[in-house]
Length: 623
Image 1: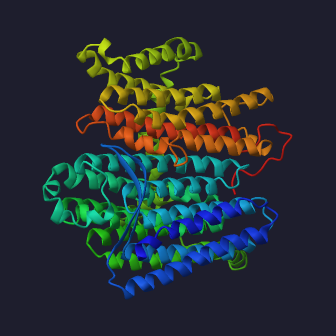
Image 2 (image 1 turned 90 degrees about the horizontal axis):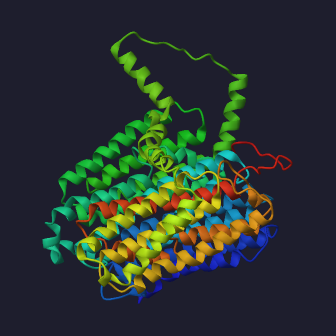
Image 3 (image 1 turned 45 degrees about the vertical axis):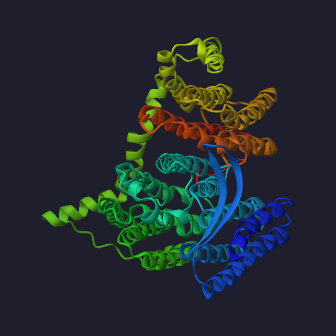
């Protein structure tokens, strides 16, 4: 009986979000009232539900929801799960959201983005609850996408300023990396288990799936894939540099996202997947190594930073590194208690940080004491100074990620300058048309040629998205290349395996609709004599707020956000890449990563940032 109530923990924030969107920004009391009613109802419901669950058998609860898509070889369902981890995270999430929303009423009062802020908080609250109550990886991925988009919207909250938009794009690049690795983890699980596995079944692995446990792929590869996801989302080494950049949004959003809830989701993922690796000593050592390395580096950075938000961000990262160690050692209850303590402490620190900062500046002005500087000419003295300088420079983590992760891809894209509009229309599109004809008439080509076509079309798709990733002149050209990338990916999968083409059609349905509407939006800007150059920020949301919202929705749709069938289609088509096709899965994964980045880059460059016409108000570069 209790398991049937799990769905209401998702419906409550969803209904609150829908209701809040109907009111105008000036109706602050109504918007705040809806938000608080939603959060309090959810909190009380979670409290009563947990008490009833504890009084009962305290066994895990599982609710099998609706099947969004089901065939003989594919299954995508929405399932919900409740255990001690769900109960703990759910109560903390509701409590923190209640406190932050209460504080935000006065903090955001009369702000022109009051409604947008509370809607984004409710949107995040929906996503975090989907993750916490998820019963399988597919459901968890929906929530994962939601909190990623909510993060982007709140970091770029001051969307007429340069740095918030720039840093939002930086953060979303890391999140996209985590999203695709999570998809790869799901893909690997599908091949190992030959179906979609629930979190309830994970706890019975030792009994039901002993041959799978002994599989070397399962034993190390799958946990390592999920570890990368956890490292990125929790800003662990070497991905730590994005968290301070995410502090550009309102202080209250920084508190709920990057001080407390969102940044701890990596720990939650490790706890959820622990049955996969709890007997794997090598993996545990790897997790402990990453956790301790992060703790040392983040602590050394936090001690020497001059901004209070950066200090708090790296302090939180250091504590999360210790939580990774605790989870790896099997101390799950300690990790949960540690999570609760760190969450409330960082939330408090961020909420009072503006007042503390003002007091410290005032105190320093009237009570200035010259620092006692000294450098010892000893080995340990030089070591200390080296760590100090590295801490000031944040161990060059931001530069490291750009140089070794994004810069090589940009260099590859810049080498494709020969791909012009003429090449696209007279060479690339005809090649796709020929491939489309052959995929429906495979008997016209030999088996040897057909065997090579999947990789060939995957390479073409990767080339298209590389060019879109670096395109700076024409947004329409970049948008068209994004669509072509999706088309070539579907074509490569179509040649890769014999299966029903309706699965490809599910994937492409959202692409075509979103792509067409997006192209019409770009044409609308051109007809109004507006710039669609991607060489800088245009700030069109200043004049065209409705068009900006429509383009954001279609950008989410074409990138695989769970509002179109493309979201399900991504999971389906990945399932048709075989285990031994390493080049194919690498090209497809890279295409999906760059696809999301190219799309968000188009949106941010066109609609966010300072307006390109100087006769409009020019905001400060940073919040």
